[in-house]
Length: 106
Image 1: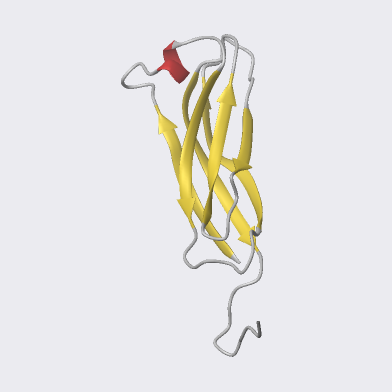
Image 2: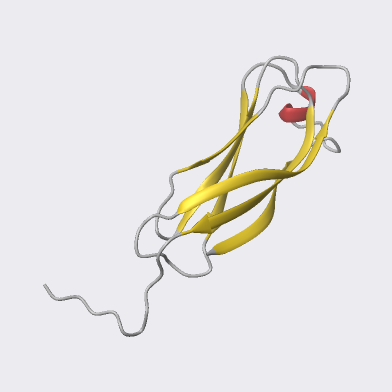
């Protein structure tokens, strides 16, 4: 098991497109596991911080993509007129790790 908490973006101070834009928008953040798994693990995500404008609907998607033994991408998407100031995501990965006594017979 591995876990962490990362800021995906913070755009309200500089007027970034998540805060000031409209239409479909996306931000990606790469996560590196502390040590590689034997195969791609299961990854669970949740928002640990959500800062959005109150005057529009809450339209958002948070997903893990491109999961490998070494890491994955956290992807946040929003659309229409939703104004997102900042997002932070908590993640947890569960899978098999290598052991010193493991050996491969091929």
